[in-house]
Image (tube, rainbow, N blue to C red; front, side, top):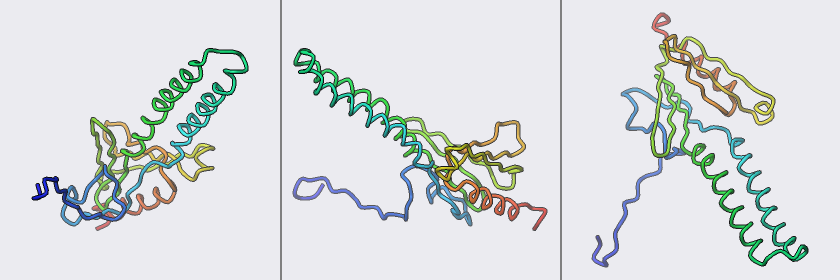
Amino acid sequence: MSHSGRVRTARLPIRGNMPRMGLREEHLAEGEAVILRLRTHRKVLLRPLAWIVVLGAVAVGSWIVTPMFGLPSWAPLFATGVAVLLVVAATIPPYLKWVTTTYVVTNQRVSLRTGILTHTGRDIPLYRINDVTFEKQLDDRLFGCGTLVISDGSDREGMVLDDVPDVEQVQRTLQDLVRKSDPRDN
């Protein structure tokens, strides 16, 4: 505490465009460098945005319709309250998932980190990767993103990275890194 009684907070240096969640610099191995730091494409926020517009229109409509049909004066207030609760339920979880999901590609591994209360992560070392494929649905092509599937030849299911921005470029970059990490090429 300072002598004025207020709690002082330390200001930490900002490291570029680093998201709050994900692979931090202190989690990198010696000689490991971040090549790509990605977040799912913003298109995942369009559905919550649509819910805001639709439920906002319902709330406004309830205020307009109430006097026309002689409904009780509390009806538009009730409808607005329900609309607000539905907006919160329909928008906050997808937004939090978008904010807390990161994909990091380093010169040694691919990392997926996600979660709010329970943080989960999966890493695949580049030298274990044997297949990198992508898939682009029609809406993905419109928004310039896609799904990247990374397989490592183990019994585990491949790592699926949904809604990766510029997925084809990310796939090429990852394939180049995998080739460079192959011990047979060194």
